[in-house]
Length: 435
Image 1: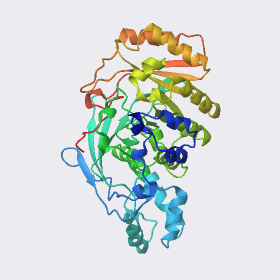
Image 2: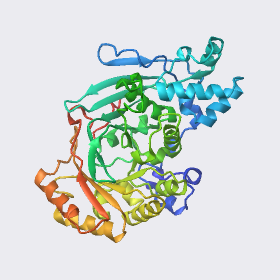
Image 3: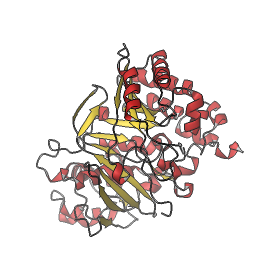
Image 4: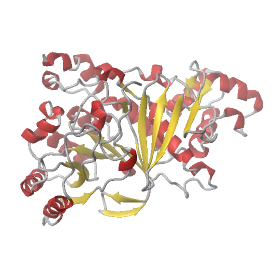
């Protein structure tokens, strides 16, 4: 019966290039084989006419465009230059459009003043600068904001902006920053028991294109007025980017990596790789691919248990990639990066929150000699969930075991909930299955 969930041999070779022993184990829900899309076919879908127009009544605005043009937002600098030349325009037009998009937040070619009016129509007929989507904005009482984005095919995803004091996992202290929590897929195949995203209807699942990923960050920056400042980089509301939204980023590796490569460009948003975190449920081949490609962003592992028996109970992926293989992959990635690896640990009342579990987790991390940062996450309830969050006393006791360990290898903090009242907290993201 499990054969139906095994990833095709050619898919694993093409996307990760790892040995076929992983194929024999399989992954519950598949390796994303049903979600794979050709990046060029998905990139050329939709555009934004004008992102700065005000939200209509009901908090919803719609952006539509012709689907026959090339989507510039999904292209790297080099690809945009090639497309520009192929369309009969000079390559330097690519640099002009690039800076207007990423430095000024402008997506209407006719408003780009350093481009001649003669070229406006031809460029507008050839390129689109934003994917076709609708946006619905929700604001929490604690200042957290969540956007539900309706995509061109009727599916939807959610993105979250977390303002205020953000924890620096390298330095172990907080500073005033703002993080965007980005989705990489519509839904998720992994169906971790404590995560609301995994309950979504599998029929609506798919990978997000590179432009749909980048559009989430650009939408947030526009909504917060970042591009209205004289010095955009000095008045930046978005300082951190975390791939912790809907979906498993490593099952959409190609589009996620291309999005990151675009976002860190010096002539664009110029985000720092050390301020970008990719969270995975433990897709071992993808972690090894990240190390091989020198991806060089912060890596976060959804661990949630210190042993295979308990982790397999919570996360089906552990049956395919058990803790020993996962930790070996973390060692391999850590050898290529000077950054600490974050281990996320959801605190579930009476299930994984005892002092025994804390000591077992500490022993696990020390045995592999990984420079680690443990994020303890109180469980955020959602409709139909079978779990309850641990009490504050148990969370503090668990934290004390890790925090007072006489080692520089392990640091620990509690990620207290933000945006619970609007369903924006960790593990709460999900969109209606009817979409």
